[in-house]
Image (cartoon, rainbow, N blue to C red; front, top):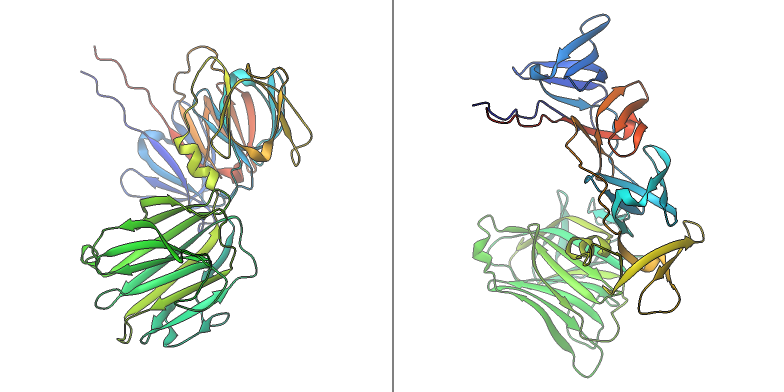
Length: 435
């Protein structure tokens, strides 16, 4: 019996490297520059320890790290092709036959609609608004907090707050929280005041005690407090007395999501008609002991609410196009065309329920699903490239030059990709059938 062949080569990005690193299967490490790799497994590289080029077979190679690759992408959409490849891009226009897109790895491309399964819209890099603290500059200490070794540390009952110049419609607030004995802690956000308790204020807050966590909506209306989300998780379930807490807020949809140590603990809507618009974040310690709470690695950044929606959306009927807007509404039918440029695009979508095509602003679209057309078998290719911005490309062959990687794509044909955008290259071997 013949066993399936394991992956022979993986190339991953390392931001600190300045040259390509070739890690051998026996643990050896070579430094140099990959010149080319062929489908039959031969790597040609210029090594620092020798003159000229060397040829290394893939079965001798474990990993190569590119030293000058880049991960970030400023594109607004991701296309998923029929073979599973993902292309970060900006959509320039759509016709009855093609999608015209702009990429940072291969320039402008025209892609037949039959080769595209989905277009995820509204994908944007998350801009960091604040990351710290590095000191107390910009923070207002109410009582009993100080700065120490990258952390805000409580000295007893009291609060520390910061007001931001502006906050986006959707943002995430994450921080590490450590506690000494039992937690007795609150964080207020979207607040218009630095007051830590009482009063008629419009804001949200999370409170964490020995029995668990709760997110509440404080209101200036008749009903002062609304419980939105309860997590019955004892503080004793955190053996190191610390947790990573992240709150994601979609103001437009008035939805809140709570993550603890990277896991979604729950989500809840704001029951009121309008979300609070304050720009103050406030940490409150309700424990009298010194150093009862320590807050560090605070990250306030834009949050792309569309990204979470994409994970749960279902395309529906494979025999037609489908459009899902930012509010979750689905339209089935045919995407006729687009008008306007990339910065102000409108989609013309023909629904069987309407006599004329609907005109839908691209900014209001979450996902496009294209009619599935049988375009033949898509066998796995020998090579698979990772791109910055969570992109990927299959390749039948590729050749690395100083600035360009020339490859043959199974759908798009010959492509020239900026080498600086390649973050990973994996060699794939199809399992051999048993004899």
